[in-house]
Image 1 (tube, one colour):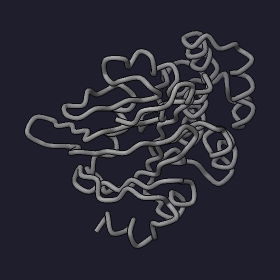
Image 2: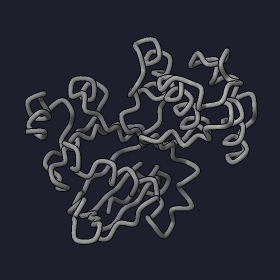
Image 3: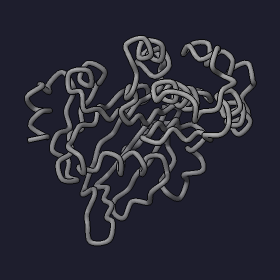
Image 4: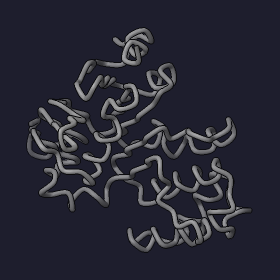
Length: 234
């Protein structure tokens, strides 16, 4: 496990031979890497490679069955409580109440994190949802729901973003609107799952490639080519 000198910030993520199984099926096996504060790792791999399991472990939602894991200096799962409020998780599910409006959902999450209401209004305006903010989530398009989910993810200014296909369902205008919130310029460390090899490489400092739950690639993004990433899906 990576260590830091006194006064230094701990790694955003530090994994040492982490494994996870679902019954007889091994989802992750001996995954190890360290991600510095503010850095981005793009995670590539075919369906079933272990990408979502990895994100759920980092979010404190799954317990690793082997190895050691730490997020923002908090050992998982023992100290997960120290990290949860400093993480923003965007998964396949938006984690929004369908019968509540965009504004009601975000105000609910703002109360959970002790965030002022002004932050909610700032975000809905930034992603172009101000005119639809008082409509229930269930009435909105998938792209609008994704924008609302991104607002929820960044509402509390997390230090680590766990992003699973964050641009799914977004048109070019929607993608441009959310880019300042979840892109490099936001300053948070990011674990970014993507099936878009070109875009993922452009966003990343490091690349993690998973094949069958095993770590097939760990390298600086500048040293990884499109063919390397596409080979994970062969």
